[in-house]
Length: 424
Ligand code: ADE
Image (cartoon, rainbow, N blue to C red; front, side, top):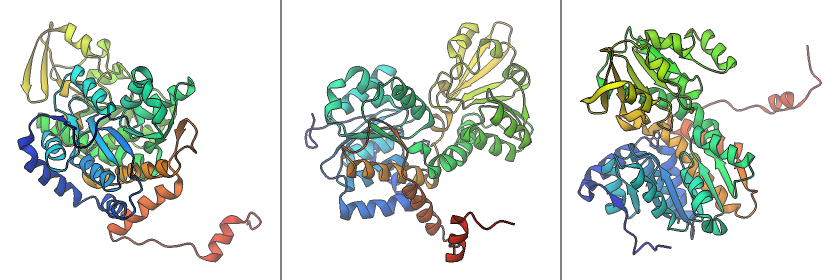
């Protein structure tokens, strides 16, 4: 186990810290809920004495969460949850200015990525905080000695929750995890409006493409897909949705999108964006029929939604066309452009979701950590949802911070809603 005074993180360049501080402070202006929680945590210290390991995208928004956890009394270390999502200036500020040990370098290879995860786990955490379940998976596969002292964990994202549920179904999950993603104030906003905006932002920054008039194929019509489809339509694109499940497919149709199999969509796509959480959604046979110049990007958690090995094997050569844009020259003369190595393009080529939406996601994270701390030993191993009152509290504070008031039920209305006797 490491102690605060002996710990040293691993960041790209500590000299970037002043830029990181600026960016973290700028984000804080749009994070009223986490700021309020931070203030309360400073007084109440609900996480005092707890060692935490967090594996999250190392961004300005995450930094504000880390500061809230630290002020709540946690001894927290942070590592990246994706090799390409780290903001190096923020990592430097956390490490050099705020004293939060951070292991994260933008562009790190897989070996460094996992070394960072293991080093964070050397902290012997009582609590884990994941975005994609890599800490939990590593602990259960390789660091089982740590299980004895862990009281619980939290999980940020859909893909991580799916992974954890399959662990739980196999009887392989040994501690309680709060699925933060399941909170309404998380997925209805972060996944939809956050992913919607930041995905278009990432693709725009990488390519400078004009969306108006483009055929944009959105693979997956979950909350993230919905956000991207709606924002792409708002920019004037012709949006096509692909799905494997009939109900979301039907919703997409009735929302006014064209729906068709990927093999058809791939032939007419100018831009394909995957957000499914599954592998090879854009596979070799889809790549084979794409138009010259088509752009392929992923905004799902892992980089396996596009069959990149197949694309590489089809190519006679590759070269960087711009930062985060790789050109693949195929044998038949077509060029396809892969963005951000197939990693989540919103974090690879842009700054991820804006702080205003991460405010709610991370308020849920902070409250989930507090809930786990106050229920230590009382929750069964498995996947838990955040209590509804905490979820609603996040929405209430957010509305208040936006200066928006809502009505309250009258006594008469409460009585009406709880009775079954009155009808027509
Ligand atoms: N996931 C998506 N956007 C993010 C951000 N800005 N910070 C942390 N995690 C994110």
